[in-house]
Image (cartoon, rainbow, N blue to C red; front, top):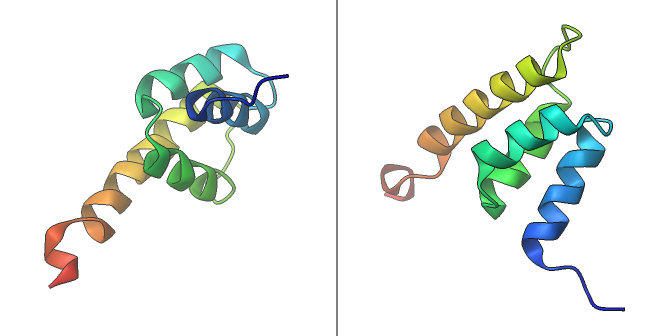
Length: 80
């Protein structure tokens, strides 16, 4: 059996995170684009996001927080 590639691991992780909701998973894949940092942030922020019952909406909200976190913590200005 061959080992999974990194993008396959990310996509399987997103499927698990969204409780096998393929529509929400496809949306997350489209947003994250197999970026490892965004995936890790997405997973961390997923559990802290309030669930309003719509998983696709939650994907969008969490992804927005991922982008905010990247701007705040993962830019050149923070390192200085």
